[in-house]
Amino acid sequence: MALGTPVGSFQWMKLQNKSNILNTIRLQGPVSRAEIASLTGLTPPTVTNIVAELLEAGLVIESELGESTGGRKPIMLRLNAEGFYVLGVYAGVSKVKAVSAGLDGTIRQRAVLPLPKEPSAENFLSLVKETLRQVIEKTEAKREKYLGIGVGMHGLVDTERGLSIFAPNLKLRNIPLKAELEAEFNLTVEVENDVRALALGESWFGQGQGLANFICINVATGLGAGIVLDHKLYEGSTFTAGEIGHTTIDIDGPQCTCGNHGCLEAMAAGPAIAERARKRIQQGDSSLLKAWTDGHLEGVTAKMVHEAAKEGDELAIGVLADTGRYLGIGIANLLNTLNPSRIILTGGVAQAGDFVLQPLKETVARRALETPARAVSIVTSEMGEDADAVGAFTLVLRRIFTPMGVNEL
Ligand SMILES: [Zn+2]
Image 1 (cartoon, rainbow, N blue to C red):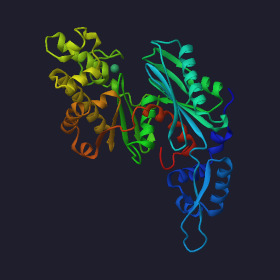
Image 2 (image 1 turned 90 degrees about the vertical axis):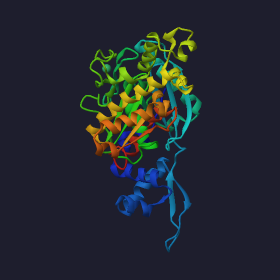
Image 3 (image 1 turned 180 degrees about the horizontal axis):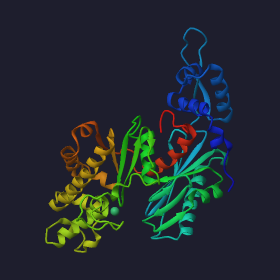
Image 4 (image 1 turned 45 degrees about the vertical axis):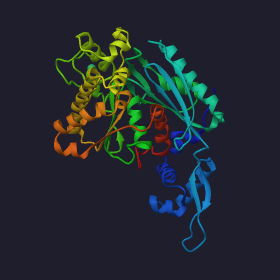
């Protein structure tokens, strides 16, 4: 399939002035050429020349006339958000989701396909491609209107090579996502760890906007964090920064998928919640969950524990409170280490609301140092169920608008 256009290529956008002006129009539009010059510090002729290129490419359009400051009314410029598309793919544990969106981040179309348990590498790649083909077909846009594909992939990701190094829940290694998708779709592809992509999405469209230092913590089947430091997504020296799920909370705790004991993930992620509820019922504690599963306790899920808590089930409330305390210890450690101004909780467990949040906040207040604890706000994400795919296509927006890291990430 031959897609693509030089407009979205890194070569085209790499001139810092061009991306700087384009980003100013995105953030401030409608805006006049004179205002762009004063906001960016560039000379009016430079602005005029670059704006002409952006108009020619169709990334920017002239809109209404602005207010006059004495002379002629200036022509205002705004982003042609509907003129181009970016594609975002979220490759999770049980499904692949792809969305198309305009340059302002508004989602246009979406396609979702289920993933089989432990697929082969070929099977996995062909499902990712098929999901993308479906969303492209639904979007009904000309091929040259797509500016790139961003992929959020669980597990360890080499962002330079666009390689999924290890996807533990699919048991796959060394999947060349970037190479495969670029060959198939003829578009620039960026691949990032799914939780880091979530953090990027929060920084552009969610509760991380304008923040220099924040941490997005995803608590679902797994547990990980995307760390933004000084307006940049922090990847670490070998792309594993943010693996807070595998920091030890209890040296005698249950064994984790990584082999260690008492990891935060083994104590607080979804499967751990279900397992603790099961254990307590097996030990003789009473709970609605016993009747709900007809005594087949292997059917207990974290979601059911939340449902039972809402019905006033004391065992379920206790299990979620413990989860909040474990998360609170993990977060207190992060606050003391990195001093972020916000913690954004995402994923299923974050939806358990005050059953988890209340004990979490109490634990943070007790265990973190006073200064970083006072500086932080702990919130739950408001980006909804497509946050994962939004994070993925934000990788493309970042390349187009802020390749030099200006203004935002
Ligand atoms: Zn672990």
